[in-house]
Length: 639
Image (cartoon, rainbow, N blue to C red; front, top):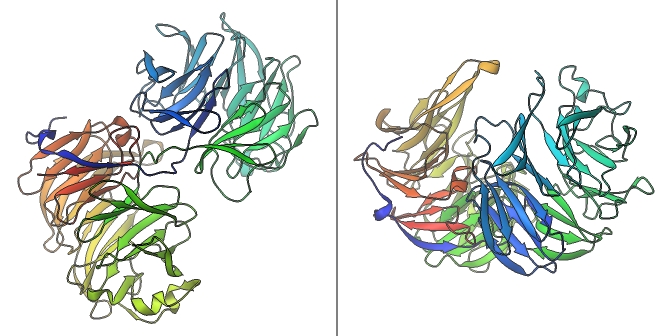
């Protein structure tokens, strides 16, 4: 795809970089000599000593990594596009590129397993076996319900492959690819999920024990009467399986201990551990009901390594934390500037809020603001107060900008605010205007509807902002249709109930939208929607700019990929967006139509909700992805 007008990154310069601590981890592995622990977040691979000292932080391919496995003292990694690399100390060697189609042609992300010098790479309905440059291909048997392999595993001697296809576990002798007996569920495990007669639960994780005589199978959903059936261990000598005592959970990763006695699995709120000698589940090493989302697990001697939203951690089976392997946030999802542009507040997906010096990129303070996702951030007009919103529990909290300490109450019933009236006298949120001093005088948890104040609108949109003059609110409200959402941009007066000054409604296919604070410019990502059911298709069309007051479209740039992030400068003169399939960040001039393409790592185009935020003067743009492995954000200076 060519740009409408010539442009280069030469006019855009990096002003600052910043690293935000406490990033989540998605993959973990321990080297064969137990001297190195590796942890992954998106495209970032951290190498650590077992006690937590970081040895290196790399981006081996620039793309999000989907698999990480040990190979002796080295590590092997595979990314979303099927690029395979070996990491030895701090050196990265590319072994093969683009082994799997990316991203639309592969319904599941690629998976790598390795044993005894043999590689196996799952690419949807195919498995590549052997060595780079000398692959043999195994194709999934025809199936209308499960056309792809959902998980694969190699035996420790590399002489057997297990591949799950739906509720079946297929086995093959290597190198002949002779079919071995298929494993089926034990009696009772064939109960369909929630009585669904069409789609039974599928196997989602496989691993051989160190002897190669047993295979553990994890199921991707719990069954109607299967509190004890989320993991099954099969004796490969006779094909008999036995369910482990468990509880309903999604099982994606399994790992046997070195002696084969213990089995480890991931879980929504804690790793799960079983003593196979006594055939019982051990107490969880982390507290339940925390929903930390354990993504991966490994053994470090007799201890457990987990990758979750808390990062990569090592525990004893009894739950004592032994070490942490800190990664920076791979990307930020929300950010806001103070009015003078000197300070930034940023957050990722872990509930932490960070205050950053915008000139240097250095973190001034961090606060554990919310249990999970931070949905919104906004400073008051004076830049002395920060408000953060929780996207899960619908609540907002207040923070002293100087100290980072929590002030005032937790207001429930809303997860973002529209802003402040002049002089910071009033707070505007959830369709209400309330005196700020009276809110901050409260403590504990208070309900928005019980606060003194007045309504400017009976049901306020969460996507709203107070105008610079402080006399109106610009709202962006979803307009729901049969096949998706459109958007309505409206300007509501704060002087009287339900007084709308103007509004513009765009139909289905205009769901991603941003507006200037005065509501006089609206930027949207436009898509065409056709068909229904299996024939349902969404086709990217363009990034469009409108004047909501007149309804006039003032600019349009065609797009070929899905727009993941979109931002509009405060004066409405520039639009920035990240588009799948493009090689960088696009910055468009609304008046001239000229576009500039600034190169960014491929991972920036794969992540959802990457923060894009213009500085109030429009001369800088925050990108919520670091251009280097150790950074979490990049601030670009604009011409």
